[in-house]
Image 1 (cartoon, protein in one colour):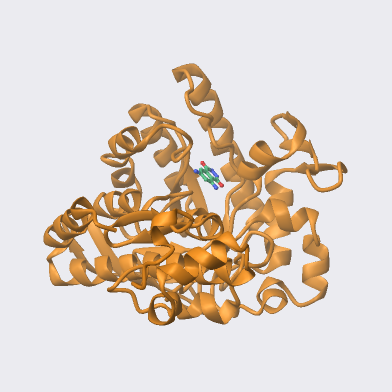
Image 2 (cartoon, rainbow, N blue to C red):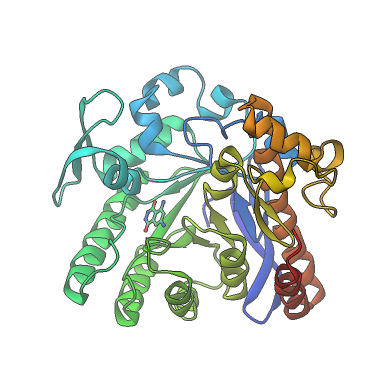
Amino acid sequence: MATGFSFELKATDGKARTGVISTPRGDIRTPAFMPVGTAATVKAMLPESVRATGADILLGNTYHLMLRPTAERIDRLGGLHKFMNWERPILTDSGGFQVMSLSGLRKLTEKGVTFKSHVDGSRHEITPERSMEIQRLLGSDIVMCFDECTPFPATEEQALESMRLSMRWAQRSRDAFGDRPGHALFGIQQGSTFREQREESAEALKSIGFDGYAVGGLAVGEGQEMMFDVLDYAPDMLPVEKPRYLMGVGKPDDIVGAVKRGIDMMDCVLPSRSGRTGQVFTRRGVLNIKNARHQDDPRPLDEECSCPACRNYSRAYLHHTFRAKEIIQSMLLTWHNLHYYQDLMQGMRDAIAAGTFAQWEADFHAKRAEGDI
Ligand SMILES: Nc1cc(N)c2c(=O)[nH][nH]c(=O)c2c1
């Protein structure tokens, strides 16, 4: 582990683990959920509100920030933490995933990816070396290797070619990252749904050596059953003493299933994005506040939730502000969803520490089966 970084496993319960990642900017309690702060903001939230939900770390998107306002400008202004007023840990992705999903006119070669900005149509190139430079300029605490997220579905040959490219890029990322005390570099396992390729990828990453290891190439349309099939073996291939990060996940039941299979960190836009579209996550399942059935309902979104929305507002009010397109609707529902996700993580951390994860998981699913939300 990089100087200034450490990961201490506090307890395990089956494959589920709880621990602490210690960084110069603060501790990260695992299993951890990272809210996504795409363009240097978790949309509709102040940083102090994000912290109040229980988040220890948030994610920044290299692709968005390199285009606007640019990494060089953020560096000149003191780095991403100062720029967005979040002094706790930040993990940045490498930009590779969003380049392939958001930009236009892309050309992928051994060197990297050239593309056209979705913002203003300007041409750009991102390589492992450039991705490391951008993430350094941003000042992120946990840097992700530049990789190719293998599309799904992929043939065995396509997946193998893609994975091996990512492993060559992982070596170049490691070489370009250098030795940066207080900053960590995570590798990303690929191999799609092919066990042997996941093994080859894990061995390649371990031989290079990283401070943490991500399971990539999932949450790309394969569905929960296939994702869990891969998670039944892929995390076990990674070093037990290093953090394991599942990228882009997910719905609450995805997260529970991933933690059950040994994952320590996750990120997803779902809770924040859903907050803006009226989708609300509760202990009894998902509801959409725009549904007319809520217009006279005096109850909170979730009787067991202590967030500002649930403490101070009725479903009727939230239904009204959604219908009226009031800004407060995005603020309150985003806050609630992120608070619910952090309560979910805290519940799992406590259950793993107590050795009661199986019962906690059963209760989690039983409440959702009761319905009546
Ligand atoms: N679902 C995913 C979300 C992501 N942000 C990534 C990524 O950034 N890199 N590589 C990946 O495989 C990947 C998968």
